[in-house]
Amino acid sequence: MTLRERLEADMKEALKAREAGRLRLSVVRLVRAGVRNAEIERGKVELDDAGVAAVVRREIKQREEVLPDYERAGRMDDVERIRAELAILREYLPAAASEEEIRRVVDEVAVEVGATGPRDMGAVMKGALARLAGRAEGAEVRRAVEARLRSG
Image (cartoon, rainbow, N blue to C red; front, top):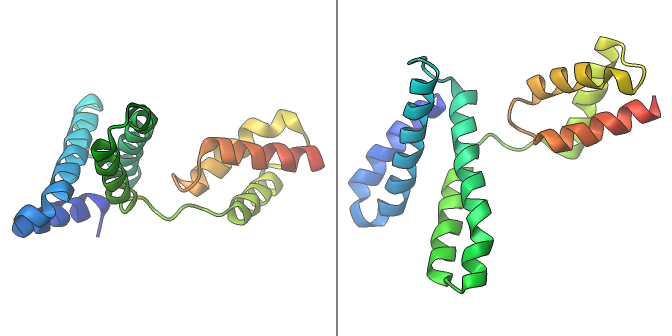
């Protein structure tokens, strides 16, 4: 089942759940609207799972950015709602790669491209990010690549 199909099924389920599924319905509708907008920006090209996951990550990032503001303002009802939305959104992302897995992928890519030093960072980053496909943040991968290239 693709991520798009899962969003569709979850929306139907939330509609059936009425009051109990109201928050999930709201979040799923926002994600689906974001997916449609991204497709329109790309010229009506249907997004694959990686594209849909990117939309979900963007929604997560938006909520994570405003959360401290609500906490400082003492708006605890909004803080709880945003945390609940974040929990729902995170269900749609693939499992995050562990540090060990990131290092393993970086090592494999470094060997494949014949990386010998810092000047090969771009090639290693490109290959590692492609293999980890949204399961790791770029900064985490960059740290692993820098450590690998420093050690040789």
